[in-house]
Image (cartoon, rainbow, N blue to C red; front, side, top):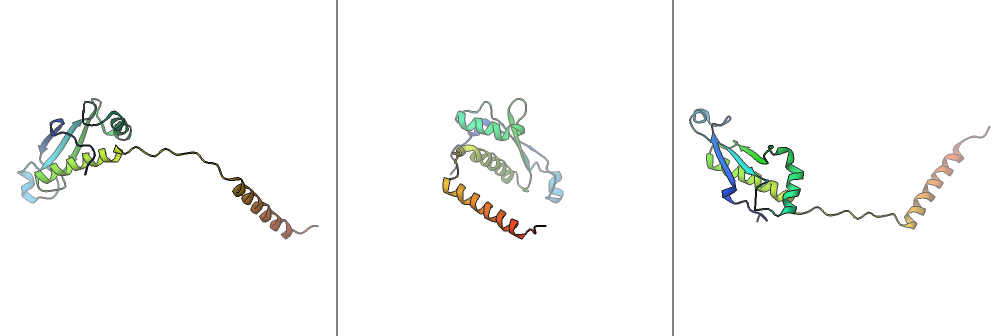
Length: 133
């Protein structure tokens, strides 16, 4: 179940002739779907989610803030339209959950001492191998 749903009023779909599978039908039917969604003017996303969306997918937006998604993998216009909407939903779902903040940690005293003693033992082992002239 998607957390945030974009209203259909905010999405514009345009159709054009597709390349790829479809044989002669490809020359007659507008099965390619281009989805346009203005991310900057949306009211469906909270500010925090929108901010994460803009950080992650800002390079895919036009200068006006419009995201364009193209789908032409299916031979059917309806399947391509639902595929484009699913792509948009997947992008939004990927930023809907905030990333966990990393808590900086330090190694314990015993682990530091253990590491140093193993290094000293290794150095001693190498020192014993060398011949004194």
